Length: 240
Image 1 (tube, rainbow, N blue to C red):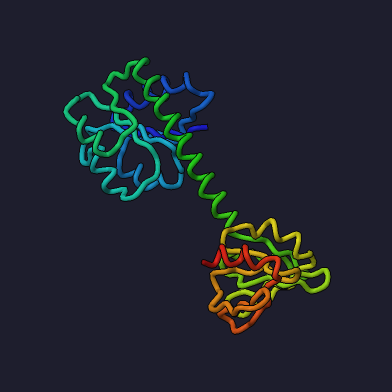
Image 2: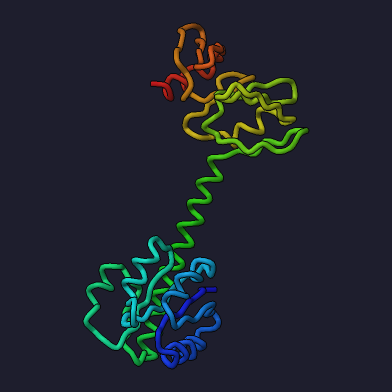
């Protein structure tokens, strides 16, 4: 549901717009109506609107000044005005639309259509950011509780019987009662590789490769881990 706020110094104008927006009640709800810019400044942040229907000409503070006073905001703006001299300024602010009063129902429908697309696009971007954030983190259940760690902080994971030991950049160790194989699919980022039966390593922290049958990797924490001959070619491809 799209949440809308109306700011218009004319009570009649704000009520008329709210009435016209009622025809979109299946997708839009008006969560606030203000006739004084100062009161809207105090309250709008707590309403978390998706769109502000903003009158341009208001005494004491016009619509553009209101946005300047507000500072940063992440909602969309649809200007409403009886004057057509502010179109360029509205475009500069990337407004969804610029509606002339009295608001025509077809123009309002077009504005809502554009608004719907903008809001949907923002939602998709937020979900993508959240998904990216979640894929960069890993939940490790232990007897004490669940640790949430950034994958980038993992130096390596070592097998210990049916347990996995996570060695992190802050010298911390987290022991999880799951096998290494269970984490191999979760640590599928480009920087991670299983180099033998007992270790998955983060190549970001490799400081030296010593030649040998399979070779040996030295890590930033001073540890050395042997590479299985079967994994050597893949390792060298990723390293070099």
